[in-house]
Length: 304
Image (tube, rainbow, N blue to C red; front, top):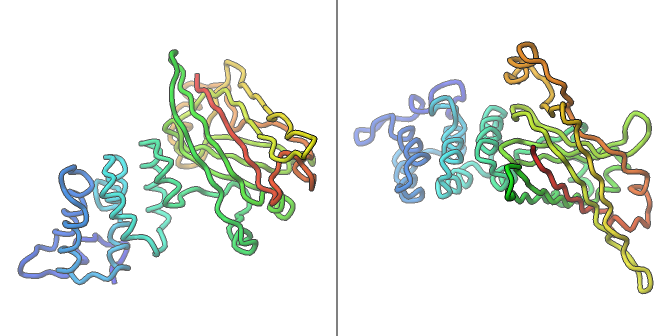
């Protein structure tokens, strides 16, 4: 079995035909070279070394290519075939915390929310709801991101959220959260019962993300009406930071940007956007929730 604290190439058995660096060089080339076919390249190597699926998954999760995993470089180099091949090889096995952090950075660099979602790299803000989701038989939340600029210099994106069984989860844990990638940053969204007993929506930047100056508009679409009463109009919530303020990721021991600039160039900063939602989230007949309590929320963000 491969050990995570040793170089992958040194852990592989040597043969007379293939040098011990073959697997490492192969996964490196596969992640960087556009004219290499993933399936036809990896199969002979795996067969020659008789690696088990678990051993290969361990190998691919090591930070052994310029300080990153091979999957990191496949994502950064937009090698879709290599990404698919690597994901297939590690699927079904736990992703180490080091590998997860590495892949989060790759998705952020390329603003790739699709791979971020596929690999389930999002982290929970507040209480972990995964055990609750399994107990409820709740499907995963859905997040779709659309990026696009305008005729000016501003960067815009939209994120659409389908938060499954949101009402029931809020009643049990008072917290529903999600992460997504857009604009070269990792963002988090959280619906939570605040300390003043009010439901609110929070949005901010996750670790390692660059600062931003956002103008945010939240939209909650009306879901239920009747034969006579039409569904209500879309609920619209706007939030603009004062022009002199900058949104920063929460400071941590590894947040190098914050450490560099908080002393050298102090800025007026905040760590999240917030807006009250009211108590309609708890209403059994709320027109803004589906019959199973699912919440459809849209976020339109302009970065200035």
